[in-house]
Image (cartoon, helix red, strand yellow):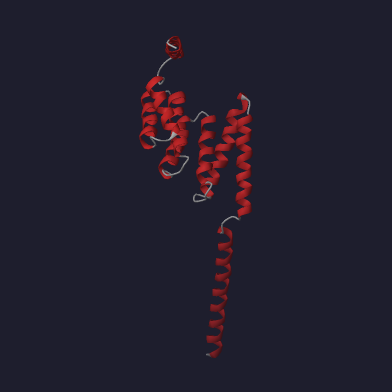
Length: 188
C-alpha cells in the first residue's frame, strides 16, 4: 500500500512539475518584448517613413504600403506603448500614400477619439480635414472637420488658420482666390 501511495505521490509530483515547466515556457513565449526589440521596431518605422518621404511617384504606393503594414503590426503588438499614437499617425500616412483615404481618415478619427487631450490632436484634426477636402473631395464633411477643430481648440494656431481658411477659401477655385487676393492688393 505504501508503494502505491508513494508511486501515486511521485506521479502527481511529476505531472505538477511538468505542468509548471510547461507554464513557465508559455510565460516566456508571451513575455513582452524587450525595450531593445521595441527600439528596433521604432527605427524600422522611421526608415520606412523616410523611404516614403523620399519615394518617387512610381514607388509611393509600395513605400506607403510597407509603412502602413509595419505601423499596424506595431500597434497590434504594443497597443499601450507610449509611441502608439505616433505610430498610428504613420499608419494614417501610409494609408494616404496607398490612396486608401477613408482608412487614413478612420485612423485619424481613432487618434482624435482615443487621445483627445494630446497636444497632437489639433494636427490629427487638421490632417483629417485636409484629406476629406482634397482626397475624398467632400466639402461639407471637410467643413465639418475644420469646424470641429475650430470649436474644440479655438485658441490653437491651427484652429485660427482653419477659421481663416473656411471663411475665405474653402470651396473656392484658384481663379476665385486669385481674384479675391488681387482685389485686396488693389485696395492697398
